[in-house]
Length: 329
Ligand code: MRU
Image (cartoon, rainbow, N blue to C red; front, side, top):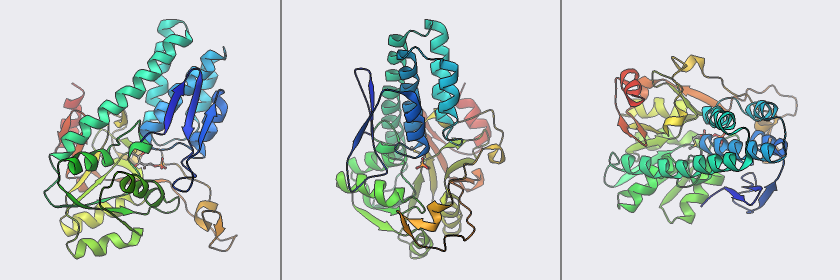
């Protein structure tokens, strides 16, 4: 399963706002609508928006446009996932080396795309080693093939463990307000014939209290130097619940999601989205149109609630600050 394709000189994105009901691929030859596609979540998930931005940068180069301007427009699309800025910085460095040569830049974007798949596969294998036999795993939001270049981070761990016969059940939080768990994670699990149960977000604690979950694994949008991390809103409450019930809580991510320039989670910028995402449920009004709404897209989970950090280089345990630093040599 994939959500991003580059063919000839055109970028194609699978419109994730329409899943799982319709599978529609949208073509892009201009970088500006790609910035809109990231903002409106046609494409979403930290690694996927990094890869998409890299290709959009190529579209600007192919059109002979100002690459500094293109980078600024793309970087303004969403603030939290660091992969977006990581990928754009890498493309800008390459542009400096090659004098803005579009073919060289396309090769760099393709490399970022392919490396991401390899990182997910490696992360999946390391992660599978910490999955217990007869696993009943809870995950939140979508950190799957659709959120990456394929395979996924948290879902990569689940896919690899499933291939090893370890997974009895995956519980997917539906993930209000935009339902990435219901629409995307459930879709990936059902498509891959992985045993899956969809739950509303407020059901996880009750399942843990009944002993029905023996591991949590989630994805990440940005991790600070001390291991605090931002992920989809609701991740923090899953971590608190897991800690209370003694359930191991893992976060899976590529190293490109780690931002050592930010000492702890308080410095991670958190996106606030349109209030109507909470007043409505997929276009249908479910609250008074004028009610005040709080709609942060992400929250920060403190490292003290994390059992282990799963990366493409291995699984890291506390003390996270020292061990993350060591990871980058
Ligand atoms: O708002 P979204 O759907 O982009 O949020 C996605 C998440 O929070 C994912 O868990 C995260 O980006 C990791 S994806 C491998």
